[in-house]
Length: 261
Image (cartoon, rainbow, N blue to C red; front, side):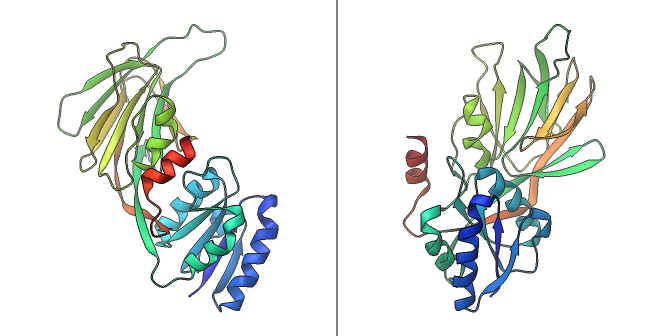
C-alpha cells in the first residue's frame, strides 16, 4: 500500500516529516505533496490542513478514487478526522486494511462551457458594482422538466450534505448527515421571512437562472462565472464521490456537537 501526504501549510511540515518516517517503518510511504495538482500514484492520502485544504484535496482524490483522512491544522476542522496532536493515529488509520469509509457526494455544475466539481456548494449571488445602487436578486430554480420557483434574496446556495455545515449553515440552512441523497437550497438574506431552506432529491438535474439581473456564480468559494439575465447553470450529482476514512465509534452527531459547541 502506498500512502501519500499532502501538507497544506508550513506549520504542518514537521508533522509531515514525522509521518513520512512512520509510514516508511510500515513499508507504506508513497510521496509528499505540496499542492493538490501533485496528488497521484498513491492508494490513500493523508491531508494536513484546515477544511479548505481538505476540501480541495478531496475533489482531486475523488477523481482518482483515492480515500483520504484529514488531520486538522485549521480552525474548526469539520472535514478532518484527527487533531494535529493525534497524527500517529491518522497514520494507523491510513494504513489499516479494514478502515471504515464514508462516501460524500459531489456536485457537478455546468457554467457556460465549463464543468466544475464542488464538494460543499454552488452559490449564485447578486452583483454589486461600485457606485451603483444595490438591488435584490431574483433567482429561479427548477428540477428538470418542472415549473420554476422564484427566490428573491441576495443569492441562493445549492449545497451537498457535506456543505450543509459550511456556507449554507451560516445562512440559516439545516444540517444534513453526509449519507443523505439530497441537495439543500438555502436563500441568502431572503426578502420574505417565509422563504426557507428546501431539501430536494439529488437524483434530478437542478436548473438555476438569473431571472432579472446578472448573478455571480461561485463553487466552494471560487469564482466560476457570471450569468446574464435569463442565463442559467445546471447542477447534478456527480458520478464521483469523495471517500473519507473514519474511526469506529466516532459518529457524525458527536462530531457536530463537538465542533459547533
